[in-house]
Picture 1: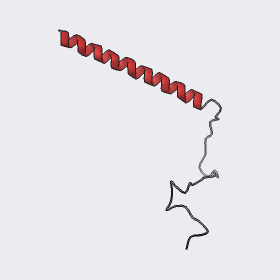
Picture 2: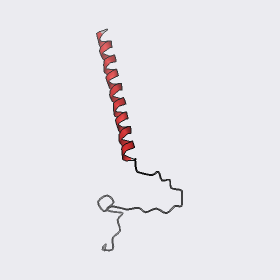
Picture 3: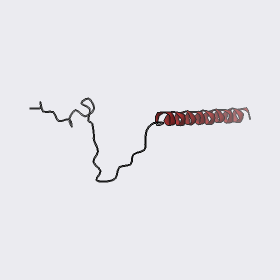
Picture 4: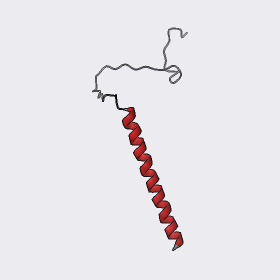
Length: 66
């Protein structure tokens, strides 16, 4: 019976920890997105895409390429 109690105790700890992590991540999401506005793009909309050199080396086109 003691093993069953210990297993249920560990499960409760895991559930509480998971809930705490989800709550904190939700708080961080709300804090980070506080001043951002939701933008939805439709097919055919023109958007500006910025490619960084260090992330897309083979896709970056430069005027100095041979």
